[in-house]
Length: 563
Image (cartoon, rainbow, N blue to C red; front, side, top):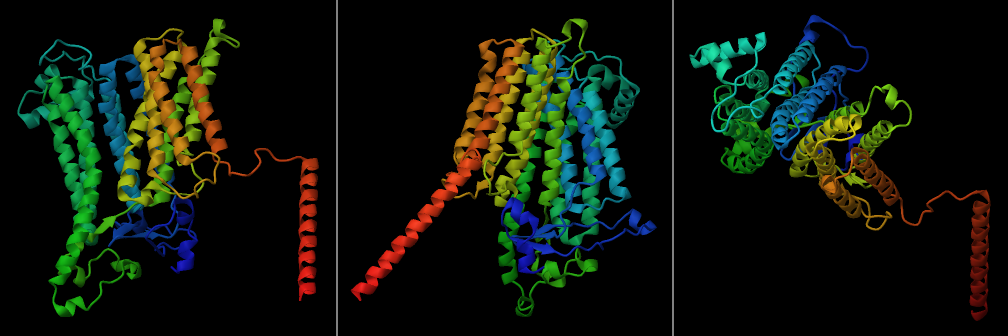
């Protein structure tokens, strides 16, 4: 594409400048032609990084209907896990929720990124989405039933499990065959829900590994980077695999924590791999024969569609086959991320809906608490979509690889905190007195979510000139952090549910008003002047112009006389 067309692309206007090359779309516009060959399309990577430059498709891809349908499964997941967390509100329940929720978020994030990079939207991808949804539902149903940390004696003794479902028994017998044990022994000495949830999660991991291998085999240009990501998936698989057999509570917590840490750090190691590879490329090119050095490597943007993912002879000789890294379509990625946050906030809205009894009809306390909960969810949605606190900014995904990965990873504590707060909101709306743990779920959840949104704002780079807004960006984000700390400390005040929810609704409303005012340009009137004020202002401007004109004429006349 020409430089002018690139500069006019929406991605630069919305997310800031970057080192990008816009590729012409391979797909023809107009009505699609459906044939048997289009049911399963060839594997493709639609955008990638090559020698520090991003090559991406021209069109602004939006999430498909089936991707949005895939997001709907998290409505059920958020509701199920939040209800389980509220039922076992305690420090132990909080720890279990953090460890149980992360695998679902990780699988959703990986699936979103994979669809973002390929985006074929064919029968194979849609079937894969349905299969992943089925696995996530199975995992959530069983993970929410885990009772290992709520019952049992101290030490390494395990708990007797409840009557296992047919799916649990089948999973137990399958794993028993692998371990050469009796199936009843596994189910009888371990939490059947933990075993079955682990089975669902490992199947989902294996499914992801299979797709990486298939794409690596079909796309030689990206083979090294895809196999590197596949290796990280295999490591995660074997970190969670011992959960099928161990029955020491501390070991289970350590393994789940290691799996979560590896999942987060894995994203950073992929970029470290890319940087290391780029540093090795010049050294390898120096060792090439003279005649091969004179031949330039073909520009990826000029490759024919049929050969776009086939390595050239120069690349094989130069040893830079792995320098092609799949990249993300920023518009598609952020649309999916925003949809996920809205789904999580929707759980909080759902929690304030109540069925009024005869004693609750009218404007009673329960209605006031429901309104406060609704205001909190609405204000958080407002603040999230204005997280950058500036008019012009460079998005974290485009600013630097570290800020981009941090932006993505920060959405896990944000989502987890909002789900916990939503679980507590349901109890606080329905009841006049709640346990101390529920208060900590509510205040701590909202506080951590607010603090996380401030950190997300700091990952962007402000491009507004200094002093052009009424409040600086750092001041606005600093107030978010301060309000987050206040919310976390609210349970210490021993307020009743109505008072606590009202206080949080007031704090979030204050931030909305403060940031709306703070983003106004300096020197502009806060309110629009009425007609008489506009006429008076115009009259003064005319008088100033007339006076300036007379002064100019006088100076000109004096100059002529002096001459």
